[in-house]
Image (cartoon, rainbow, N blue to C red; front, side, top):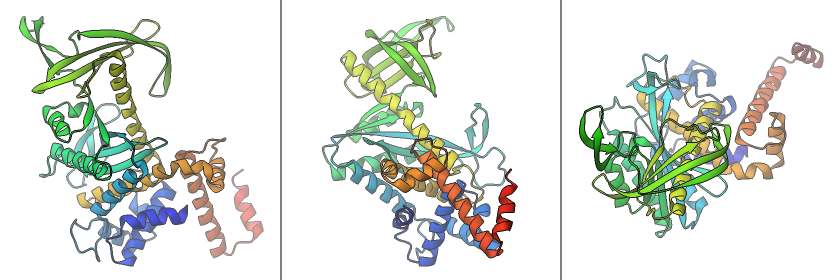
Length: 425
């Protein structure tokens, strides 16, 4: 698996001619994986190595490849090519797009610091990345990652999203012109330009609607004391039914005997006819599970209860990208970077995403390799063979290797080594 990982990174650097540069970035990738951190200073042996790696990461796009470092185009193309190849001739593919905040609350001197929300909802310093993943039969496929700061002059965040969505859509259709693509996006995409762009690509979409999205129907506004357009989330849609779920999972918590009150209707939204699906979940105690219903806007023809549920279940799978973000942050240190230049920051974010793509791509193989199973057991997996326990096992193995190397360098006797291990007790 080590050779396979090395080859994966090397393929992403195929346009970098200089072998020393390739090896430096491969070595950095292995250290990010083994130490579960993107802190370059901690991962390099001395100041010279740190300064060289910072130089490579900070190399501008379009520079001389012999002297350059991260090649964004090659890495993005490789992730897309591998994913499209893995999904083969699937008749339909679901693609999730989402922005991830990369929080740097204590940063002050990083270039073009953006503003993002903390887990508590406060505005703090940080950066953002627009990310795309595809849902396969047995695993997720990481497709593309574009880091950005709204403090940059170009490009506009919406244009950046359109460019990535278009690139992903075209990559799948180049392999299979008949493939049906369904894009899932959060509230930020509740915008007529997003609707039009996805329809221009001849793709399907399910987008979470904003609470302030207007309907085309007027009603009496008690606050304004005059007629005004009803919010779509408040409007009673034409068709309604209920669906019971014996178990419903939300943020790791299981709710039993949940009743879904579902409404759907063809509506005039964003200058065209589309479909709205609204779902309110009620607990067995009769309380709303969420303050507001979930409002979904789609170009999928929702003309039956079955299709309304299909659209709702499609959107629920969007939560899987949150698991990707958690994995990258927790096990690869996605937010740990300490470089200050914006180019270097973007490159380390993309490199980390690329490293993560390897483990998502190979996850189905974990249970088939006895050494991977052993690593997971060593990490306390108790029979579970997952990316989490595999990377944790790799970290333990890397620390053991460093310890053994130190023992050899210091020429320690077995008695001295035993004395060191006795300190554990």
